[in-house]
Amino acid sequence: MGFMSYIKEEIRVIRERDPAIKSNMEVFLYPSFKVILSYRLAHKLFLKKHYFMARWISQRAARKTGIEIHPGATIGKRLFIDHGSGVIIGETAELGDNVTLYQGVTLGGTGKEQGKRHPTLRDNVMVSAGAKVLGSFTIGENSKIGAGSVVLNEVPPNCTVVGVPGRIVKMGNLKIPRSDMDQVNLPDPVTSDITQLQRDNVRMKERISQLESKLKSLAQTKETKKERKDEAV
Image (cartoon, rainbow, N blue to C red; front, side):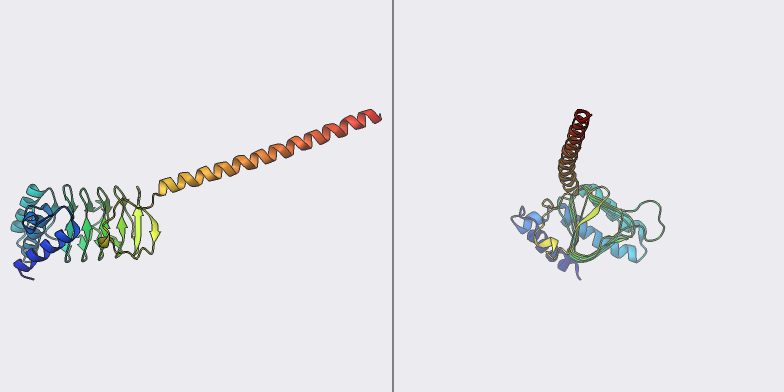
């Protein structure tokens, strides 16, 4: 794809996914637009082993946008980074098509691996604000990562992951994330656990009350029998 084709595609993607953009000219001020175009150029240089120039371009873009994309990362078509400040994409990260990242997202390593150290995100994955995906595993297509989550393990396709550490709270989510861009209305496992504990607590109290009533009744029966026996004597 030529440079002008990249520009036209990025304009279309940003206008499609960010309702705050009112005109094509505004797109040129958008951090995501600037950093992705810089990444495309830096990545080509990286593949040709012009490592210094590739890093120079990527670091210059990082200083201007607050988004750091290593030129060695492999990124598919129509990546969208909303706001973007604090986003980090590591060297061996692989992103499919139509991936969406929000501010503060890290696609990083654990510091314990060699070679492939960063995650792979399949098509249509959405990673919400502040989430961290750390390690050389795969996030399956159409999956959502909730805001502030820390994901350390493989995620199958069509799943929703939330929490620290991240865990799957919904499977078989067939709605493609980029079609709704909803990073808020996700299941809350902590609330669900607390609700379940409250229900269990109510049932336990009811059971204890029933047992106390039975014990009281047995004690009264024994006392009555004892009194009758004493009277008979």
